[in-house]
Length: 177
Image 1 (cartoon, rainbow, N blue to C red):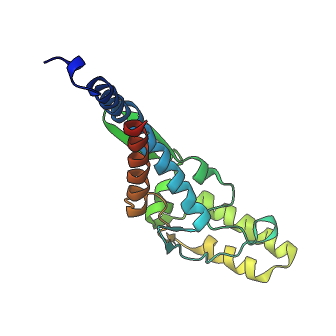
Image 2 (spheres, rainbow, N blue to C red):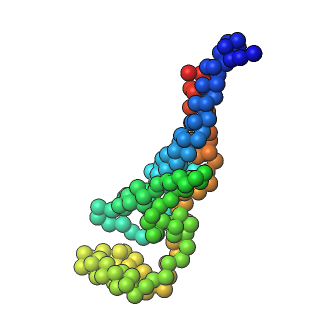
């Protein structure tokens, strides 16, 4: 028996080939795009999958007052990207400070940092801002600063569900189209 005798078999084979091609070529891109979108959204939500980030302990003044946590320049959020190598999709940030913000940890205060904190202290003093003066004085005198964990990239059930839903929609369109 050949394919001509089975009604619709050629169409089914074409749809299955399209589905296979989708898995091989498009699914890694779908995963990367959905992950980047999801992790960037965490900056807008100021938390990871519904878990809010710790509030700032430092005071913000001027144009940065009232801005979102981890939102001063937007560079960290915008640095999130993905790459596909073989069968592996990697979501990453090329910013050197990305890991300490995502995982938290201890930052050793260097002489260069102390100098900057003292400069900021004197700027606050000149402006007459006593609260800011105390903040920068404390930072200048500290040996280390504890950075709280403010996770924005990681294992996410919400992301997995978004990816699954997108793939199912795409496959449904391919097989029903």
